[in-house]
Amino acid sequence: GAVVSQHPSWVICKSGTSVKIECRSLDFQATTMFWYRQFPKQSLMLMATSNEGSKATYEQGVEKDKFLINHASLTLSTLTVTSAHPEDSSFYICSAYVRDRGENYGYTFGSGTRLTVV
Amino acid sequence: GQNIDQPTEMTATEGAIVQINCTYQTSGFNGLFWYQQHAGEAPTFLSYNVLDGLEEKGRFSSFLSRSKGYSYLLLKELQMKDSASYLCALFRGYALNFGKGTSLLVTP
Image (cartoon, rainbow over all chains, first blue to last red; front, side, top):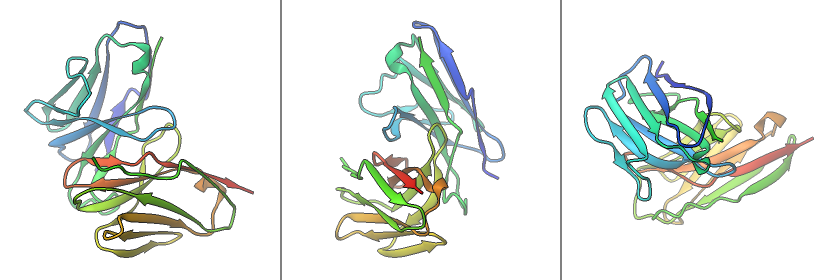
């Protein structure tokens, strides 16, 4: 149980276009979803926190107009990279906190999205 | 800030024991996680420490000392499949804040 399905797994887009990444909680309700970005050989950096039905909270240095987050339902959170540039190429991963999740002790991760902007 | 530090890379031999350290500077946190991550994949949970001391789970153990501001992950009987990145992360009742990760290479 407590699975987060993330799509797409990888995407290549042209510079200047927008890309949407979806994370769905399959068997639980995710009131909060965390979005991370990971550059090669670096750790996961928290970008923003999305809360169902309210505005996302962005970490310092993350452009909210560039990385649009929508959490319109308890099972779906989306991250849209607008006007993508090559420097946005990265591994994006979502995570949800799940109570009483014995094996994962509270957090479950999506499988990640490899974005390449050409 | 939380300044979570880990060694960047480590190499160890199959069958050996390796200890991966994690030091941090923070005023308070609920607990400390250790995750394993293979390239291009999601992190997988290894352990979670709330109290000081050692938590053992099979070949993996994790230790936390709040007073000294450090934790370590101990991997025993190393296997080739243990080659991966190992991330420590602080939990403050909200999102996880990850260290930079340690890339472990297990050699024959």
